[in-house]
Length: 259
Image (cartoon, rainbow, N blue to C red; front, side, top):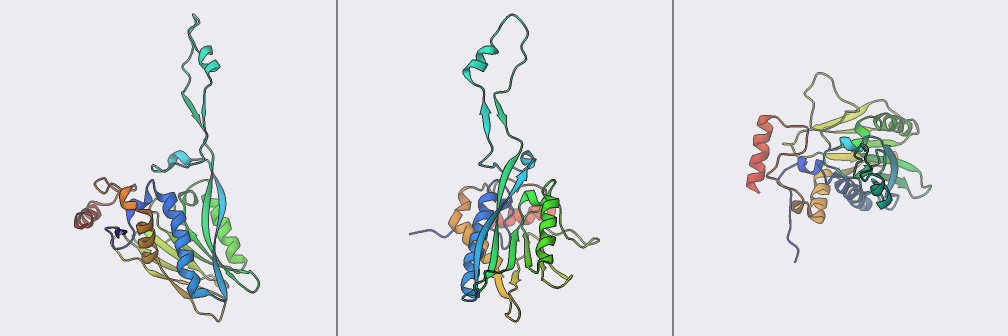
């Protein structure tokens, strides 16, 4: 008999932004596809595809370890060459770690069944999408999708990194959700703070078909349960950076203590 586990937070769990984010990202894309499938069938299907990004600054991440980072060790012969020879020999490092890794990013694509036409992309932002050098390629990709007549729903559940779109002059939120509908320059924007419930987002299809709802909190609850994230998170520690305010940290501690 399985025991139900859940996050102590009513909306986004900020602890998910840390070292387990790659697993969160992959599971979330799959669950979003799973939730949308019955709502859009039989005219549409939801598929999870991946694209790759070369990350030249993986060391800037907050405790995230990419599984495909290569580590090169010295051989025994090299060790012998560094033995004392009567001259000064500079100490070599124990390992060499590649500074460029290929990051695989999942994206949910909604396609019509009749022509396999791409109708809507749902992008869950990765850290590499929100900092150099990955920011510019993602910005260009987003424009290409819009210019190609594809709806784009962007889900940003990471507080760190650069915002692609934000209203200057207002307090910067913790989380942002944006929708670019094809054929218009207007962009729908939802803002969210850690204390808030997550929005139910509209997922557009081909006209005249109505939008379908995406219950983001339900998706996060499902992956939290399936991933048993409570076993990987130490809620006695502070959340991953950037830092919350003192007031926000007080509220976070209250939620954790209630659990």
